[in-house]
Length: 426
Image (cartoon, one colour):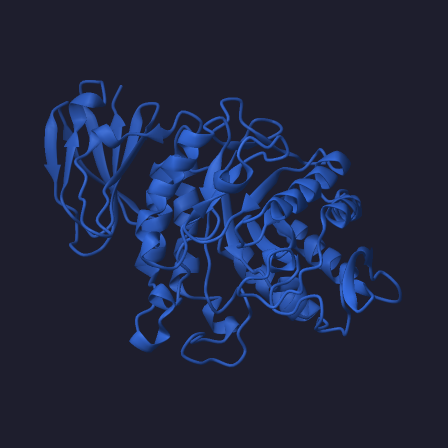
């Protein structure tokens, strides 16, 4: 079985043979609940071509996932005393709900993609704005965790993701997550486990220092907090720096800005790229893309969900995000770290100039095409080779050779984002 592990320093993910793994995920929370087999085939074919290597999906889904059947008329759980029972998954008959989940996992494996599998959405233990119902106790969460881990542990392409967009507001909520995590970890020690927090939060706020957590995620979210995704990652690293971290829910492409569709402003492809490259420079072990019309698989467009999912599948954010992974894997992977000392920052909203460096190279990201004042004297070496990387095309173009001094770089275009690539010449 192919196996993912945490790299020795605790910052990144790798394969068992120590080959680097940069997580590039898509957000498809309702995959198992809302798609047919044929639609799944279409979805995975497109996402594989676009370079994704993981998708995030929920077993007990948000949109009435335990009370409204999937496309084949099946529910995930049987009922006890009028409520769905996590200790009694419905596996009877031909092609159960769980068989459909397994079909999706197998499709993903054929495309060399992981299923980052949430056992449940958070409203099933902390309803808040969701539909629920709240069905979990610590006892049945442990039993369900053991059951779902045993059911799917044979598949190499599983990453477990606890939580589900809800705060752990009470001791009971924490116990439910702890017991579900314990059940999974005891049963399936060969797959990584993480946690998906609520908006503008980090998993260290909920599950810091938990032995069952292998890497952390943040949700920078869909409001103005999304402009500070790098700060959330920085706080996560400061809290528990011996574990990898990434943003598992940044601003979705085509999402109404700050949830206000009436204003007619939607997060753009450039907004998507901004979060991705900021987070890369902060030392993230990967990144998750999302499109607002795909995670719930929109079939009837309206202002809040403006496209059908089949159309949104081909939007430019999804086509371009692969260049992030390609750039990150192009040069020495494990030596990369944040390097804010290399460039003067811009403290305007959305203007953060991010920098990271590895052995003999550095990346400096300008999100709006602002000029970059780079401290080349901190790079080392006698000659620095400068190139421009275009995040829209993935093309890298040589610019000039520089001595080790402070230099001002004008981006090739203004208003568009660019990555300045610096390399120490031998």
